[in-house]
Image (cartoon, rainbow, N blue to C red; front, side, top):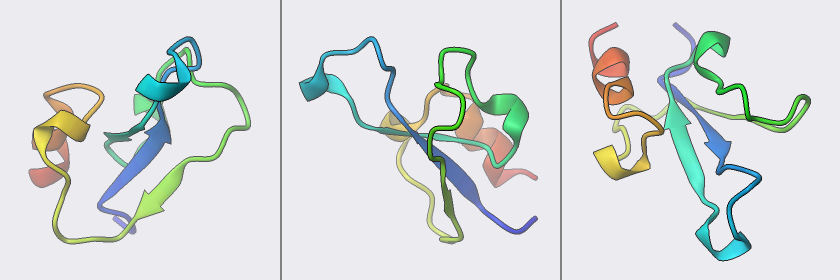
Length: 67
């Protein structure tokens, strides 16, 4: 696998001050339906993964760690 995780920018419906980068496993199937088509996804190669509060879904961190 080339990337350890990806991050996407918070939900478009959220207030601006609540938007933040959220992490997902490095696979297009984990990009949520609400994510705007053509928007930028950051691809990260870091060995150290973000803490649980940064993941879009609590199970995603485990998916990335155990691939």
